[in-house]
Length: 477
Image (tube, rainbow, N blue to C red; front, side, top):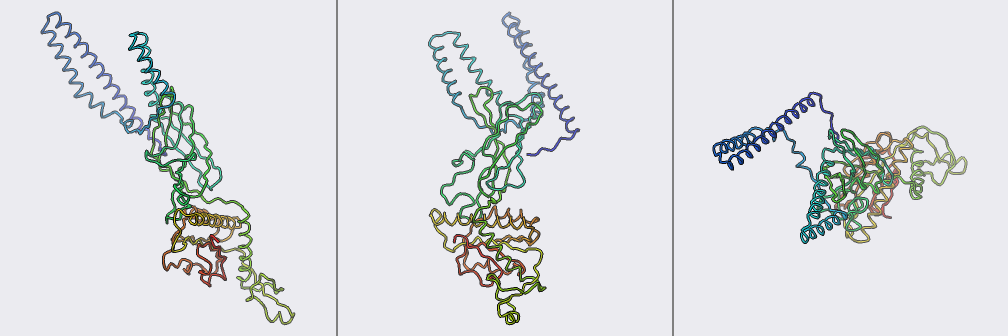
């Protein structure tokens, strides 16, 4: 949609070609006008009995017409731009248009029955208005370039501002009453008021689906039309558009439309323009009570894990319920007759690996069942919690890594990888486990990282080696 500026040399060549084309057109019209006059003179000469004069003038008229057809018409055809023939324009008769046609038919019947010349003139004028309406609306839609710029980062449920732009490439004619809107294929499904496809069932609602391995498209980008009352010739008109994407996923816009009812509102014309817009909407970062509760649990486990990751002894203190037994200093405990633990110097940076296990049971629930719907909701909740934790560690400037099926983000400062993590979470979808899959048993994770694992596996199926250095969140439980 972005158009590069034309070079001056190309512009001069195009202007010279247009002047040459107009010259050929004027010569052709003059020659045809002369042939028309010769044909009339031939008719008059024939009626006056001047047979030879009539024959010569008629032959001259035919020669001029043939010369124009052979030489000038092909030259004009080579220089004419036929892009307007490729315009995909949809037509829809409005209620006002149907009323207008009904009135024209009533007046036409009255004119035929009465033979009143005034009624015939009125009917002819009304039919001419329909023709003029079609021509003007076509001129309004022609030579209009459009563009829709989206923000770089979009979160579900948050309002964002996009920029809609119309560029009038016509040299002299302005355009009136245009709407930039979303268009749909002829065999499209039912659309909701926001513009995305309504699912057939609860389990086919885009990213919530449990019956596909790849996340479905969440919907279209432009849900509401953007109105441009006037676009001057050769100028650009821009408007800010407020958008809100209700859920995470990939939003695509296969086609945009320019719609107008100008000038009389009888017919609504929509010019369809192919589009390749795509927007990846990150999961919503919403601070709910469940998020705060999960953060508290994860923070407590992380504090307990990191307290013993250093190598320098920091202090010996009294035992607390949250302390690990392996840090008990038995000599100090014997001297003081109370349990004492060794506390090591903690490393300055927090190192966390988020793991999303999308594999569910080997025998999933039926796609249209309530159980499948509950599983889909539970998976969405797990993805939202994972995104909230990733954002929390980003705000704490931690070292963050991420791992899921067929994708891994190497541990790095969270500010460098946070949007890669959110992008993958935006398109995550539940999968059906294959027999013998070992996703959580893969030893690729570093033992120096504290892992927060989100899994759809049942309790009791997690390897025991993960419990000492991980916090496991069971999705759906």
